[in-house]
Image (spheres, rainbow, N blue to C red):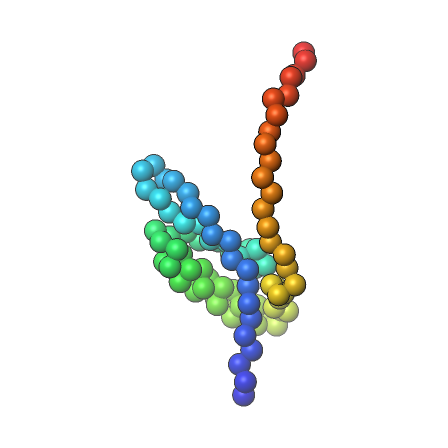
Length: 88
């Protein structure tokens, strides 16, 4: 029996917690988030959460969300905000 592989987009952002730097990771398709002290640590933890979510969905006979990352285009836009005068 061939195993099905699912690919999910993960967003990782660094965050300062006091003097400490942590990494927040989020899987938008499943709504799962976690944080860790390193990128590797948060990915391992998030993978565990994703596996638990998928097991739960399968047990409940619900459809698994699919994230077609091959057809997604992810980019960033830089904006230079201008001072806006506020009139009272």
